[in-house]
Amino acid sequence: MSSTWPLWEVFVRSRRGLSHVHVGSLHAPDAELALRNARDVYTRRQEGVSLWVVPSSEIVASDPGEREAFFDPADDKVYRHPTFYSVPEGVEHL
Amino acid sequence: MTAPSDALSDYVLGLGDDALVSAQRMSWWISRAPELEEDLALANIGLDQLGQARTLLAYAGEVEGTGRSEDDLAYLRDDRDFRNVWLVERPQTDFGVAMARLLVFSTYQCELYAALASSTDATLAGIAGKAVKEVAYHRDHARLWTLRLGDGTTESHARMQVALEGEWPHVEELFAPVEGALVDPQSLRSAVLSRVEEVVVEATLSVPQVSPAIGGGRRGLHTEHLGHLLAEMQDLHRSHPGVTW
Image 1 (spheres, one colour):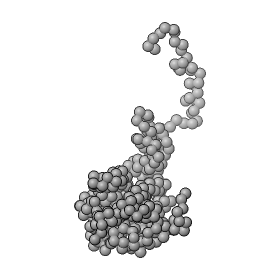
Image 2 (cartoon, chains in turn yellow, red):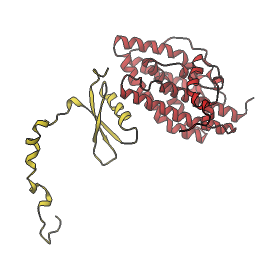
Image 3 (cartoon, chains in turn orange, blue):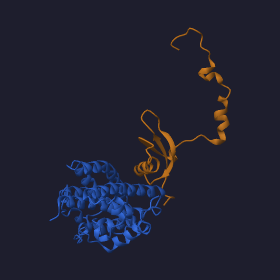
Image 4 (cartoon, helix red, strand yellow):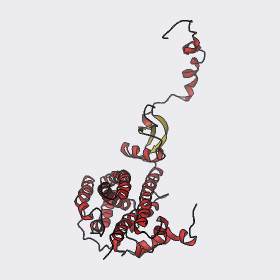
């Protein structure tokens, strides 16, 4: 049966005010049951107050082969971090 | 004539035994469900039922006043002393049967616990108030599978219909009069039947037209299956009295 049940990615919000965080995946025949399976597999120990399930096939992912082109150029752009700038003395409300 | 406290403890024992025996039957599915996800779901449902059984049996022992604990009641009684209905004690080794039975049983428990939650007995009201949320989820699970199997393939439709035909004779026993009942079982009948039948019709299945089985579980009269279930469930405790882990 596994071969016919699609894969779903599961996101759990652990409490109000926090964002949904990816916790894993599971198999389910449709969205309604995916949500219930997620409840049973990932929130049995009070892990969450809200759940999202997304068909794994709908996730568009970056290509590991393109990792260097995607992410390495940010390495030497230290000026993009706010800590790069020193705040002149006496400046308020910054 | 039965004293009021005996009647009450017998009534609570019936509710606790329903949950306990159902939990034991549900545990058969652990490692046997069609998918890991369903395995966990059924284990969760069984454990919810076991939790209800524990609080109900502990309370039955307390009302009885003889000092019997939940373990004494679960492990040291013989089948004739059990008060569960026939619906929950028969084997359920077909997934369709397990879902058909859960649909009936959880719908009954939903109505029962909702009514008990506002009963005059504070302890039972507390137990029922907590349990009603659990059984609402059980019902939802059984409903979704009944819809999918009923309105699925020709094979799943046919097997789901057979499953319903097998469970239906045991529905009426749920509503048989019980001495000491805080909620008259008969008062739950129309709501339970209409909610179950609504799902059956939506699943493109037909409501079985069958005669009720004899029943008698509330009086300690059981099918041959209960003895086998108890033998397995009670073996460890009886071989090693007082065992804990």
